[in-house]
Length: 512
Image (tube, rainbow, N blue to C red; front, side, top):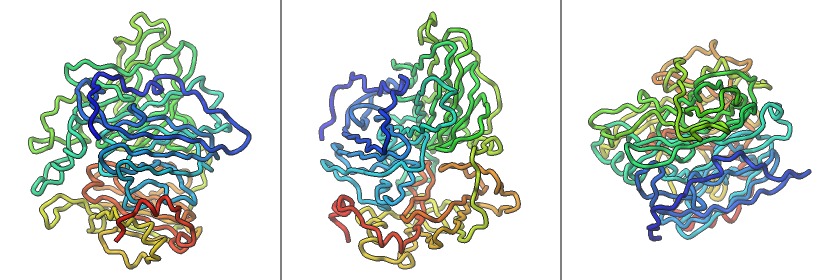
């Protein structure tokens, strides 16, 4: 497909800067239908023109909305010159694991000029999620957007007047394919590529190039729910709004006992809902999304090491009646110290309803290291094995169609099996030993994305009750491309008894 030459188009998703208009609520579960048309064009969200991927001719892509218990039906029409696959981050996919959207794991890729309809329920879920390409580092080129599942029984509904969605991302001036070819070049031993800028809801500024700032408008005396999503490929953000405390009410689909912070850390794929009260003087205030350079090490060997990046990404919270009307601010930032590259203090995050599973019945241990392959290419290893994707023959099809047993997969597939139906899985990720007595088994955070500290560890527990093949991986996209991914095959015998849709089978025309 030729690249569009309409370089001056305003392709921002303007829905990002207006309060959410809720979908019509019915008395029964509703199928929420969407169509994604993927395309390629030239555009400059930070002022620097480059090739980008768009969904429905906009970036970020459409905000998907549903009510808890509804079903999404999303048809992805791929008009890109490359293959793809869309993942629905945080969706449980109960009974629909093949629609998780991870090529080589749950499906083959969607070829150019082809389509696939994903269908899955939102039963048992509410809150803030996102969708993105799960092929190569494509979402760094623009294939991403927010998913919001509303809950009529949300205990916070009375505490705010309107909903806003905010995406934070790093942005590169080379395409993901260009960067990846340099990153995977034999002999390259440098660090992850350095971004050129950062964007708030698709808007940012690079050097002295002309571009727009993200502006969110509020009325004095009202309260606003901001749903904040880090959609980066590499970068850790610290989010704040000058003069306004952030009341945290939701963490990645879980309601929490409300608490206040001034500055909110988010690593890639993490999400928070915060309530912001417009109780200050009616003027403009800086929204700050600061990228931590400590989390993106740089030296003279690093790809794009001479980037002109400004780590202090800004937008504006503009009060109705402000004399500057969203053009600038003299507001003062908060100075609270936030530890970079780490989770928000877990002792603050207390789920409203906590009943964590105890006494693990199956334990999987993953030791994560880095090395160099026999082809002199950097690689990430899990238990001394770097994941090698098989895009023409995904794991789900091998198990469901071919009847393959987990024990027969090669080591490069990094597969762990969980077979204790309704038992408790424990996944330990480590570079050092850990003290089990230090675990919080009373009210630990419930989330789908966490930070494993350098030379540290984390423990994750969940009930084994959802048959499928699940990607367990680093969300720093450069790390996943060098093999930092494991596959969790949950209840494979149960999975074999389920029926794989023809639409998934038909994608795999070149199966070996």
